[in-house]
Image (cartoon, rainbow, N blue to C red):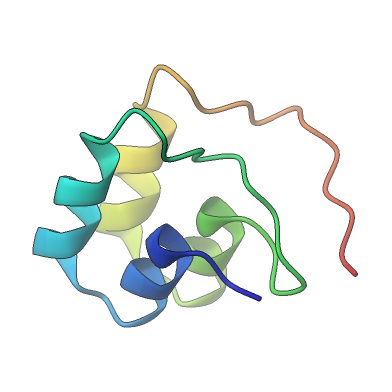
Length: 68
């Protein structure tokens, strides 16, 4: 099941995405069966979301991704 950040990326809703990133309980590295928000941004060729996620201080690009 995707989380709200992943859904915002998939739907390319930049306003909601940016709002969600301000919330301390949002984990940018959270992984669902669809992957992380970063993976969804890559798959959808959403460079703006990809760039924002890469610049997030919480992002861990080396975290192992385990798809369920």
